[in-house]
Amino acid sequence: MANNTLKIHPEDNVLVALTDLQAGDVVEFNGRQIGIVANIPAKHKFAEQQLNPGQEIIMYGSLVGKAVEAIPAGGILTTGNVKHQVSGFTGKTKTISWQAPDVSKWVDKTFLGYHREDGQVGTGNYWLVIPLVFCENRNVETIKQAFMENLGFGQQDLYKSYVQQMVELYQAGKTEEIAQLPLNSVTSNGQQRIFENIDGIKFLTHEGGCGGIRQDSDMLCALLAGYIHNPNVAGATILSLGCQNAQVPILEERIKALNPNFSKPLIILEQQKEGTEQELLTLAIRRTFLGLVEANKQKREPAPLSKLVIGLECGGSDGFSGISANPAVGHVSDLVVALGGKSMLSEFPELCGVEQELINRCVSDETADRFVHLMRAYARAAEAVGSGFDMNPSPGNIKDGLITDAIKSAGAAKKGGTSPVVDVLDYGEYATRPGLNLLCTPGNDVESTTAMAGSGANIILFTTGLGTPTGNPIAPVIKVSSNTKLAQRMPDIIDVDTGPVIAGEKTIEEMGEAMLDYIIEVASGNIQSKAQVLGQDDFIPWKRGVSL
Image (cartoon, rainbow, N blue to C red; front, side, top):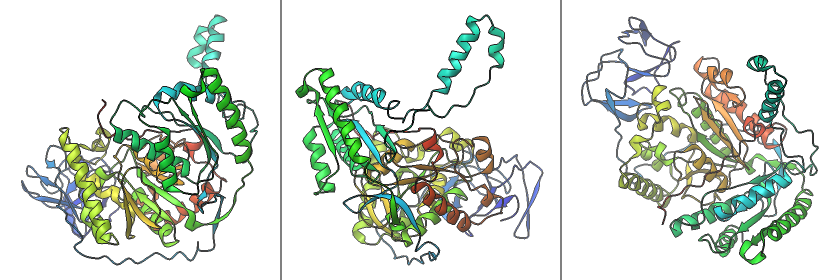
């Protein structure tokens, strides 16, 4: 690494600009001088030597594209001169040995969590209110309005107060003062929480449960069962209409499959059985309140770090994500795995091009074969509707240096660290094996984080280079910036800044270790992540099928 240039892997034939480079600049790398022939914004890549048409482009030691026209040394890579290309993959071709990191510093450390009867430990204590079908969304919202402020979980709407101030100025004939009216920060409604050991009541409205194919409603039930089973959840209230595809017995069967001895409070009400809407809501509110009384009896107690289940996510990625934030998170994953915990890497479209590496890290042929099957089935499904993994990068990704899906994927996979892959899960399946799990989800940020919590994640690390205000209703989401400019520009959403890696001030290992210490504080309830402070409760189930 030079002060303005980085070569990620010795086999790479492109370099990363760490700062803005101008046409006519000369950069020195490994004793060579390279003349920059076009303006290259920071985060973008340029050719180390001339690349001829059809020549493979290597980054992270992997094939990430091919040149479609000549690119001179010092020339920028763009969507116009580079096309997506990846290597093929098969079953396991070799076994990779893993050298676990030194975790002696954390072996005796604990976090304060909620111990469940099934042995899981939560980083939070939430009550869920969930509709089995979108027809019940309105009733769920009514319960939300009844509970949130009265129980001290609501926040004063500062923008509502802001508009009220403008109304008062307008009515007083002081319209000109509105242009200079500041927004006063308000974070609390002043109401003390009634239940001190409950971290919140979460309302998971959605647009599913009926009208689509049966597989989608079954998958929704599996996802909701995972949320109810998640250790961060104390109990749940389920509202069913009665006639929908997502039937109550399906949900109950899914819960039983996860835990035959399920003992959490679970309130299930069907509107078509209860009678009027008022009768349904009165019963739901009364029984939920009594459930909260029971849930409030649980308190945080010390738990080993082996009880951490870390979701690994990225969104709004940039050209620095794969060299700062993602590998730092990958080191966290390795530390947690070495301590006996679980981590899960999702977003299968963003593992395109690095499949063989992950396959070779699988602990068994069976695990590897399942990953191959899910990846190929997903790719075929995307192609069947006229798309493909190569169309994954967003305009923001491309603008900030991720010009092919393979480049994006090679960096995104770094979140998974280097540990063995112990299991491969389809969407809606629950993580049970300690170690790194691969979870089949879309690349969509919220669909992916939604799935990870449903698969048992009790905390989520979310890297971003552009800034993404994503959270989850039950799993604290810790936002990690790839660059310091983002952390300074959007401090309200960023928890951890890995920009010092780009500046050469800290190593990936140092950032990962600091991040694990921060996770312990969030998991113990001593610190709220920025997404929690903002009340960012994003929940979007993945709908794979068509509507019928």
